[in-house]
Image 1: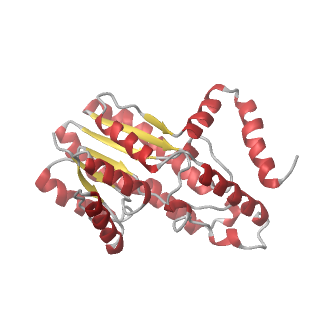
Image 2 (image 1 turned 45 degrees about the vertical axis):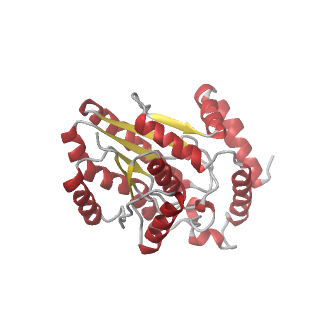
Image 3 (image 1 turned 135 degrees about the vertical axis):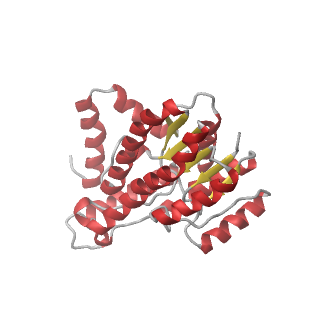
Length: 285
């Protein structure tokens, strides 16, 4: 069986960590990147780790580029064993402070990008009668938070797509898995933080709350015990387990909050979890 794996958005953060981990474990990894600068970084990181990575430049929102890249690879080497849908962007800001173009961009990358890549790889997987599609989601797809309306909405949508897709293609021998990490310290919280333009405007009615929310988020990042290595290990499991699960939760905090929502009555969870979060941000109660 081929060991070829495509990872989208592999120029930084979780995607790069996963690419290096899989390459170290014997996979033939295609770590797609956005530009030449990211490609150079990926090649350098691979050299430092003593592995080889292919780094095609591919924007998941460019359907023609995705199709051309996938066809060029599969024409000579056959279907991918797995595709890790990691490409994603963040948008932080209260809903009224997020412009329509900013929200559309989040959905174009986080949801439509995954759909475009899936459409490109499915024909050869279907012909091979095997394959694994892994969608990197978030605890924010199970329990949403304020100040991340667009991002959480895109991840809820991504999981809905993955659940429906799973039912369509499992009979064809193709498995679907969703990986839901807790908050992790990566570039997502620095250079790729993705703050809405108007969220930093002091005249916004939400300005003070957003600043407080960002402080609380930074504290969660600083104290987070979850690591990129744990996510990479989980993706490896989803690629190699004989019976991969639909969902993999990564991190103790994510597991705790998802478990609480699963077992507490809805109104009780909403009153205590969401209620406490709102009080901490608004300094009310």
